[in-house]
Image 1 (tube, rainbow, N blue to C red):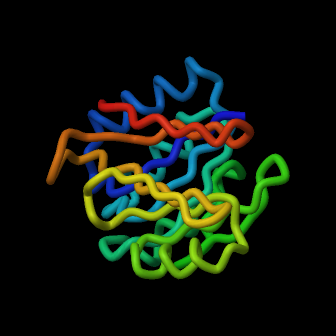
Image 2: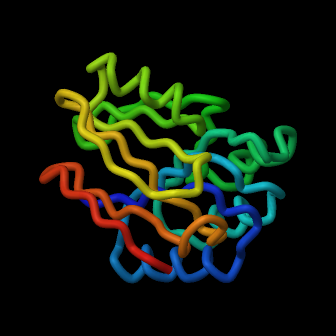
Image 3: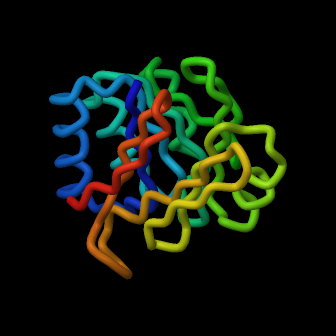
Length: 162
């Protein structure tokens, strides 16, 4: 199963619309978001337009009051707070915004995949059995906007430029 991993949208709606279109065309069942929607507008758009499930955590630039409540109206929107730990297709996944927390989770060996953001640069590291992915950002701050396409079964990671 392939999933899309996003981070650091920072209200970049044009790029988010492209990702959601790509995801729906590819019939991606899950989007994992590593924080920094900024306003709740991108979160609401994602929840209303993406045909699959969304798993999101807080970043450092968030509306901490409104964004988590979107799950009341959008059952496909799952907000975990500052850290997410869940299983998809038998794979253990952890999601945080900050790379120092992600590195600790990856080094623990307790997860198959760890996803994080914050740096605005895409990266991929393997730590033992764990693959740690930063998808880059969607706003195009330090590099062209990116998201990650992750195959949970084959463990292949592709960075897609928007």
